[in-house]
Length: 101
Ligand code: HEC
Image 1: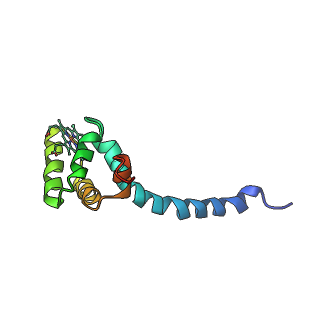
Image 2: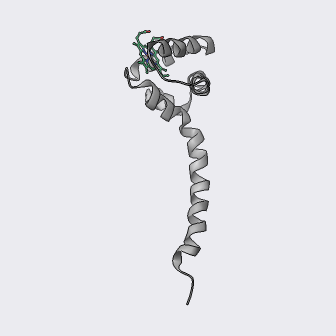
């Protein structure tokens, strides 16, 4: 008898997962952080208004610290990534704000 189908399909599935999930995870970091960490208290409009002003790193750092004082739960790494997302004008943030058009 031949091998059951799973023995041939499984490595292929693993390959697909590796090929597509890793780059997507890096790309979606900003998107999921903003959606999970920032939109529980207010709409993205607050963030988008600030995005329009093209504020720099120190300004965004102050905003993030201020959100933490309001109760946002963010570890050091997440704070850093978020500041990067906003100052680099990450495509997912621009798209969330409709600024990519
Ligand atoms: C625990 C609730 C809470 C969370 C979570 C939160 N915010 Fe806020 N945010 C507030 C409140 C309250 C205000 C209005 C008071 C103020 O302006 O400081 C505000 C105002 C703002 C403003 C406008 C004022 C400013 O400082 O420019 C921005 C931008 C902002 N939030 C961004 C964010 C971002 C980015 C995140 C995610 C990292 C986030 N917020 C998560 C509560 C929150």
